Image 1 (cartoon, rainbow, N blue to C red):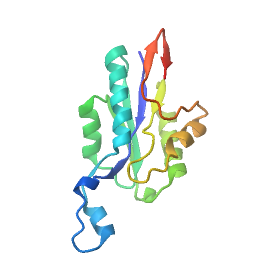
Image 2 (image 1 turned 60 degrees about the horizontal axis):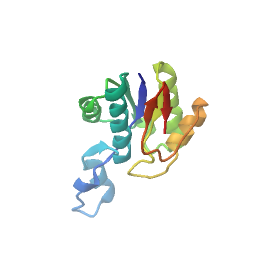
Image 3 (image 1 turned 45 degrees about the vertical axis):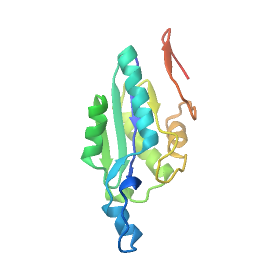
Image 4 (image 1 turned 30 degrees about the horizontal axis):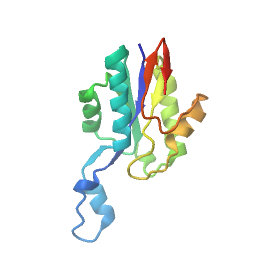
Length: 157
């Protein structure tokens, strides 16, 4: 059994981005949002682990305006629970600020065995949040993992 905490980020669905009046910022604000593709990969792997070995998948997200439908999507995919910090003060937050908030969420959630993050966000591709989160929590960090297996009680990457 493995309990997985998965970090997800809300990003603009660029496939539905429409710029009609030349104002890119307004178009971005109006565009539909979705879970970052990279984070979906992490969520799918967490759900596979749960299906094979039991346990629980918990989704966490932090941002300036996290949409409820994104959390519902994660739950519909197979996550067991979700926690969100949605605060306008997080508008434009960098990887350090986001990792600090996610770390505090992880500390309060208790009982997780591993945290999965996408390799980067599909909007900024900063590659910062996962490593900074691990540092903040004092836990090991592995990058660009493509497969996880639980064997003899040990998680192999």
